[in-house]
Image (tube, rainbow, N blue to C red; front, top):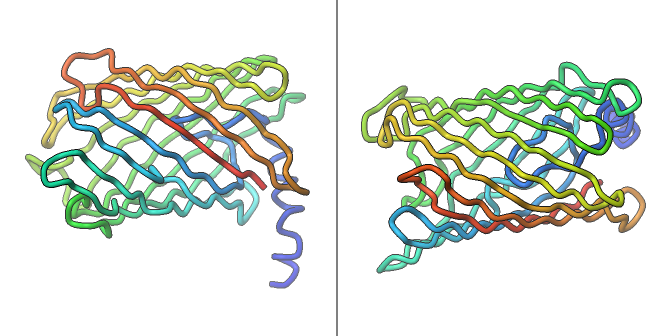
Length: 255
């Protein structure tokens, strides 16, 4: 057990050396395995015109405990909505497990294939909890060509009570990021973030958000620690979206 922790960073470095070295996008969950602390903030304009501020957005501590494996333990998000009276409280707790099946770094093919299993636990305040556990199996992949890369995910959220009318249902999410590296540390990107609701409260609705943005990093801080920051703006391009637009700020400390 002592050797396990003693060799932790050596194992992390060896694992990451076998995959592409792209930057993590703003919204799309990267198929890469990352070890970092991350905190994001959203300011969403909802379809009803209200503003929802989300601090944390399901991000938190990301660790690589074993070869090919990453675990994310999110910090619970604090949310506020400008209704009268004001709504505020903690959102549900989320976890994510990644397993990387295939990967090659830039010198050996520049690609990656990973699967995720997400869990949302209904531990939030009454105002923002979903009241149900939900599992989200996802497949993620990426391919790079020189300084350009594409990272993409496809997943479905499955609540523990199955498909229930007037509740969350089983939304399907498709996210793709087109990314380019400039001057080694500037990563402009364009994301497409699509969700389709086949059932539940929003049955047969779909939403496509375009997300232009930029991520800057990784800037060395001390030894293994670095700093990465990013910002973007989501814009709904489908009619009757749940979210009209969204300002995104992101901060990460990879280590």
